Image (tube, rainbow, N blue to C red; front, side):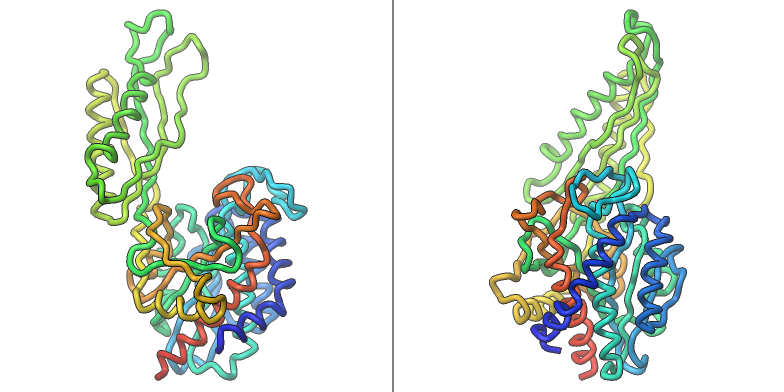
Length: 396
């Protein structure tokens, strides 16, 4: 399918895609709680006459289009929201206090449903299978790993997979990515400092976890500035500190949260070892105890196959113009799309949604995050063309 034709067809259903996105945006659900979101996806697939498997990965949906006789490619959208209170002024803002689609997964789901609509209309022309992954729990729950482990890449075996993510750093009408490692390996940090609390007037009778925590946090920053090769990339970010309730009481415990990032799993594991070592030894020096945990899932780096990026880039050039297709540097954000590309050739592409005229300028995970909805049909067109042109290429 010529990319310009796909863009034109997607533009014809743009209002429908936007309507779906807004319905999703009003009702955000956190990881593995995507019950209503999954129901909306199933509703639209039923309306389109598309077969699917559900549940998969607890709250996911796996749909299929095609005759099942030829090659198989997959398209993926994540569905979960974030525990953020929305501060935008849009009329379709979140109706659930403390939850928000601040990473654009509502856009991703709507764009993939748009692609489903177009692909279904061309099913008689499809020799092969297009799988549609409506995946839960990208935000730390490793829904991609669970989808993979429950067989989403098998029967028939997926030969290529593509994912899109809205990107507020890039203007609407542009896309970008790179071959090789595009997104980082990531880990969450949960650090507890246990001391001996007491009255703040007699600090000598306590073992102060606040002071100890301050020393640990300061020293952790030396890992990146003094231990990491300046030509390598790494992140040690402390993002939350909780300890104490009163001005005249030294607490017994302080909780510290953070995240570690590297472009390799070896690099991530090295950061984890050094954080643990530094925290425990500084705590010991202050006669406190450090309990270092890395909860949840350590995401591997997202690695794009070079041929798949060239394939996607060629489609982007024909659809949007070469000047709107960007070779990007690696980004220290993480993605559980990585679990798919550990086993299958694939490419993760970012889609510009920045529009200063409507204040769509804020980063993902920001309470003021907005996405220019005029980009959504472009995402649908890209998904559609990635799938159809991949099947043609694999068939030859």
